[in-house]
Length: 126
Image (cartoon, rainbow, N blue to C red; front, side, top):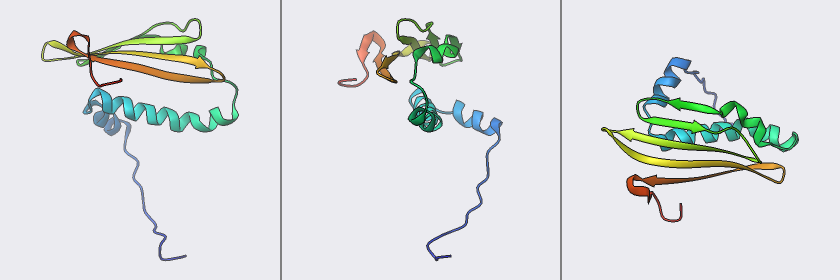
């Protein structure tokens, strides 16, 4: 075996450790981690599978909340599914986010926009 190859032992964290790590992250870090996991998990299936449909995301319908974040997902309808997200902390709203997943061709497109209090955009062009 060439010297450039190395053997490493990987330890797999427990689900409790993963949940603890995840809960310690802010909303954008959580969103990024979930997005990457979804892309990694669905990449091979989407490359060779049937066309993606918003109806396949019906399992996301409902309301989810913890002390700092609320998500409210509407029922998929007419080729889209949408969510309103509210971030809170220190007794005040600190972020509002609108998420829409739409069918385009044989794929799904994620669009989102975030605002600070007062509907002030969180980033230019975002």
